[in-house]
Structure formats: C-alpha cells, structure tokens
Length: 103
Image (cartoon, rainbow, N blue to C red; front, side, top):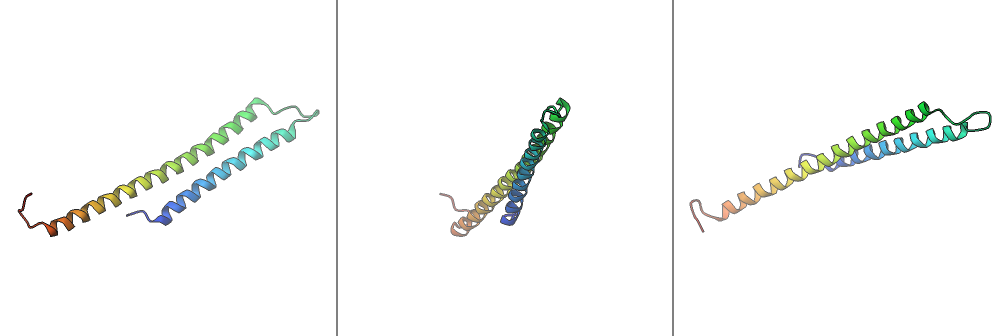
C-alpha cells in the first residue's frame, strides 16, 4: 500500500480543522452581526451579509476539496492493496500448478 495510515490521519485531521475554521468563522460573523443590531445601529447591509456567505462557502469548498483528496487517497490505496493481494495469490497458485498444466 503506497499511502500509509498516517497520511489518512493527516488528511482527516486537516479536513476536521478546516471544518472547525469554517464553523468558527461563520459563528464569529453571525455574532458580530447580531452584536451590531441595536437601536443606534441598524442591521448589517446586504453587501456585508453577502461577504459572510461568500466566506462561508469558500471555506466549505476548501473542506470539500480536502475530503475529496482523502477519499481519492483511500480508494487508490485500497485498489493498490487489492491488486497486490491478487498478484501474490496468482504467484502462489503458480507455484502449486506445474507449468503447462491445465484443468
């Protein structure tokens, strides 16, 4: 297998950290907006809300890319592992069956 378990763990941790960052960013943004709504200060403008939505989805896009990378790595490693097992099984069977023999 070409991708060690530590690589999977690193990718998972990176994805988890990115999700946490996105959530913290969204929470901070919402908190700032709710704190700013008072009689003296009206609700945030649409442009500010749009920027918050853009930032949230930018982080979500990064997280999705990291998850895709992790999934691709797992599938690739699994495929390589299966191919290795098949090749070893073929080699083992070849040692049991004399060359040129047919069933």
